[in-house]
Length: 194
Image (tube, helix red, strand yellow):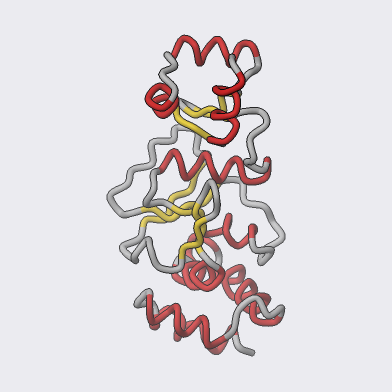
């Protein structure tokens, strides 16, 4: 592999085989040879990463999940709560919010999808290689999906975020208005502001 291709692959971070074939003109068999030689790593079906890429190891699973479920998906639920330090227990699955029509193609049960009609553009932070719900949206969706996440987890996470100054009551109220989730916040308001 020449230095120019090496640098291009390194800068791409996580990439799909089709992307490399279009941008660099590399065949699938060449990609396979590069994996065998250790030039790139195969991380999931059709996904590769350069060993010296800037994707942090702790973010790799999030980047793979968002790539797998497409640009309308974002890390959410328990995964987002854990990312922000609002729960101590690491989830066994990667939780994502996805549009209602998106089907879970995973047979490994590696992902937990929260299907939502709520806009997937509001309250989403775009990181370099993945998208994740911001703190306010994460807390509101924890309350909305309390039957899946756990009511105690939703309430204690919201209390912790407020206590540690990660968000404010005003920001939560504003986000609930933007997401049309005022009723969700009102249901838990007394429990979280104590």
